[in-house]
Amino acid sequence: MKKINIGLIGFGNVGCGVIKILQQRKAFLAQKIGIEIAIKKICDKDTTKKRDVLIDKSLLTSDANLVLNDPAIDIVVELMGGTTLAKDYILSALKKGKHVVTANKALLAEHGLELFAEASERGKNIYFEASVGAGIPIIKSIREGLIANKFSCVFGIVNGTSNYVLTQMSDENCTFSTALSAAQAKGFAEKDPSLDIQGIDSAHKLVLLTYLAFGRIVNLKDIFIEGISHISLADINYAKELGYTIKLLAIAKKEGNELEVRVHPTFLPQEHLLASVDGVFNAIYVSSDLAGDLMFYGPGAGQLSAASAVVSDIVDLTQDIKAGLFRPTLNTVEDNLIKGLRKIDEFENKYYIRIMAIDKPGVLAKISGILAKYGISIASVTQKEKLKSQVVPVVMITHQAKEKSLRSALKMIDKLTDIKEKSIAIRIEGV
Image 1 (cartoon, rainbow, N blue to C red):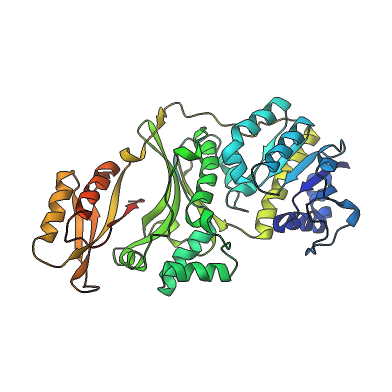
Image 2 (image 1 turned 30 degrees about the vertical axis):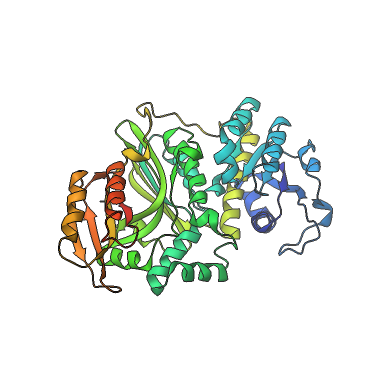
């Protein structure tokens, strides 16, 4: 039986999960694929740390060169994270004739073109299923299962921390800070959760989904990113009353001959499939021309979930090596109908608006007049009970409106002496 040797760089939580699976399912996998997958070397900066998997200590090293320079190692698995050393190690592995498996979405989002180009030049592959949605097989599905399809949009709940916080606010009727503290207490949020709650992690993943679905690498700076820290409990509850749920969505969609790529909190109708995705679960919803609308759902994190995806990539590469095949990492073709990226000012959406106004005659007329001046039509308006003194929340749903017009209108509304807080606007999708 042919043997394929693996070198692992990064022996943290997911790395331990990969080793567990390769140990416990060794015979199972060999029987399925006709190849023995052997762990040749494991590299980590801390070789003395106690871990939840037993290994032969002779496999451990703190020197990555013992993995990269070993001619017997066929596949390097990078699970160390970061965008500096990890990039150097992957480039080195490719140059030394090794295939690569990684879960490093930040690295691929920032340096993917360079790394994929190097892999192609060397006739090697970089596989990265675990970088989006952990064990959810979304990358393989778009790249292979839906290869004959063209896509109109990809919507994703791809950050478990933010989704847990929003779910907690809704279910427990609590504030953002209370929900975030609960997420940290349960280990669902980092001590510094900024990458998650500010939408950066979702944007990294959106870069990869956009490339897979539309054949275009988008720079992070070109993605509109808005986090969830400004979402109030009032907005959560008003959304429920109006028949919506608030989710942090990563969105890539074609509008005419332009592509919109954005991450932000979104009102979704409660009957939409994504609206029922709660807690730390992830889901990616795709609209395709042949297969129709599909949703991929599952845990977005977790040791064995992510490790399962890494092992899947390893197995795919062993099959290629055995057959002597080279399949390009990304067999994407750029959608030639897309002429460019749409700027945020040109986005068109329906909107939820909450305006905190003094309760007196004529105020609503002033607000409506400003909105009309900017061509914004109101679908519904509700004046809620007074929250404090004479201030009342005025909640509106608009018809389709251009982002630039809405922002200009709200800026003018907020200058009115009768408005006591900065107005809130949240985009509506799925209707």
